[in-house]
Length: 234
Image: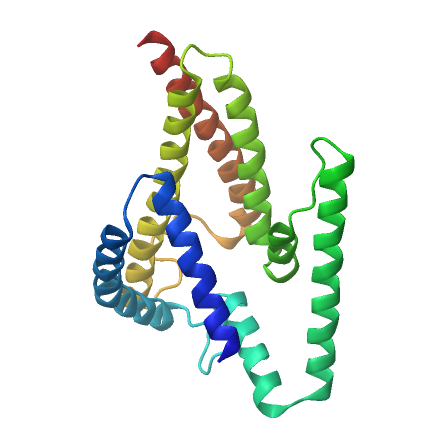
């Protein structure tokens, strides 16, 4: 109960802080939350059911060989089992986690007092510990791309507007990837084929990963260059 109260309080503080940044009011934020809850209740359950039928989730009954990992769900499940079952080993691991977290927070505070730019964000470290590398690697790459773009934006005539367009572009990529993933999942579920749009065999898998990565880098570079030039010409 205490854990849930703390999590909800933290969520409310984050919402209020965000509302202050965008000059919103608590009442408008509450209405936005109501709309968000209704929309989520209508959209998320059928999408999750579709994903479960197409792939399944790692650790769940009936999961396929291509089951999707669910690290957050696994973490919360492990915490709940440790509390309910009162497992000494799991409590010990939780204690070590608390000590590691306290150490990282202390190190971050010391670096903030002794250096200008070197920091160890506790949230980033925590995400790196329990999220798979496939997820954290792209977060790191995104941070590097954002840093590179912000440096270029600072040299333009409208740095703030350029950075905002960069954020919008990144947000569009995230949303677009999610929409395409749902569409692809629907194809897998309805055709009962794990590779419904595959045009080459398994022998091309390694080459396709390299080609896809190179194409992604080139597209990102071209899009961000286009954003910078569009604002410079405006």
